[in-house]
Structure formats: C-alpha cells, structure tokens
Length: 196
Image 1 (spheres, rainbow, N blue to C red):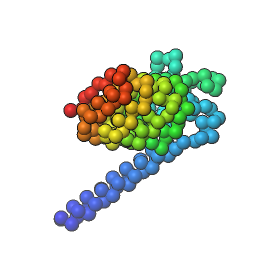
Image 2: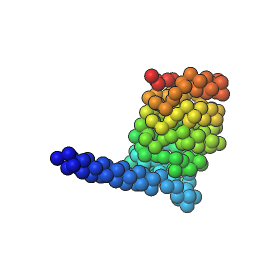
Image 3: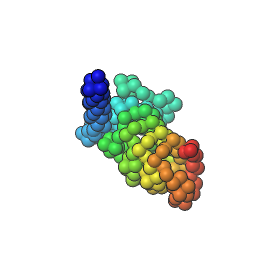
Image 4: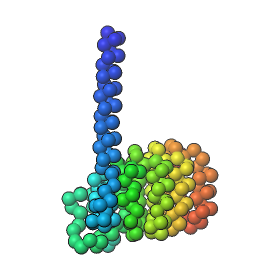
C-alpha cells in the first residue's frame, strides 16, 4: 500500500511539474520581443499588444478607460495612441519582454501586482530606460515574491518618480535602509509601505 501511495504521489508530482513547465514555456513565448513588429506598428502599439497578450491592461493618453481586450485595441494612424498607464496585475510579463517598453515616451504609471515573473532584473531594466527615467512618476510593486531590496533600490534611477507603493514583498529584508537610500536619491519621492 505504501509503495502504491509513493507511485501515485510521484506521478502527480511529475504531472504538476509538466504542467508548470508547459505554462512557463508558453509565458516565455508570449514575452518574446518581435523587433520587426515594433518597427512596423510603433513602440506603443507593439507594447500594448505584448501587455494584453500577457494579461495586463493599458491606458492610453487621453482615455480614462483601461484596455484589457487584445481584439479591442484602438485602430487608427500609427503613433496616434500613446501608452500612459500599465496595470500588470496577475499578468505573466517577464524580463524577456521588457524591450517592448524601451520606446515608450509617455508612460507615467506602472502597477506590478501579483506578477510571479517580476524580479530584481526587471526593476533594474525598467529603471535603466532613459524614456522611463523621464516620464514615469507613479509605481506600485505589490506581492511580487521575487523582488528584493536590490531591485527596489534600483528604482532610484527613475528621477521623476513621485509616488512608490510597496506591499507584501517578502524579499525585502532591510526595509529601512532600502527606503533611506531611495529617499536620499529621490527627495521628492513619497513612499507608502505595507511590508510587515
């Protein structure tokens, strides 16, 4: 009976691993950057397509409504619609796709909440983009288990960041030092914390 139980547990474990591996592979495919597509439709349209494909939402400049339906993206002349906000709550965006953000010049806010693939390298990449250093002023990082102090400190490069909300980040071990470093680099930054 014990042997049968172990065999069943092993089979279930293998099945779970296969399922997780498949979804990880599929999410990586969704995040692949198509540079030809970016050239053809422009950075904002290509980034919107990537974000919606991965389950995120976007808000375009001049609109109050968040777009979440890939097939409902607005059409019109190339370059007409500029991404102003990204809500990546529970999306599968990952580092591999962050090149999509490179050409965004009007992005003002990003919400990264419950994003299982967001890690320090993502925040470092985001912070290193010159366009975002100029335009981004509001950011939330919530329940992203792979984010540590290192990733949060990298946000100091976003020189126009005015508001940062950090919540449920178990990888943050030295909260006070991290906050102090950000405040020193960005004196105008309002940091809201819920890290206990």
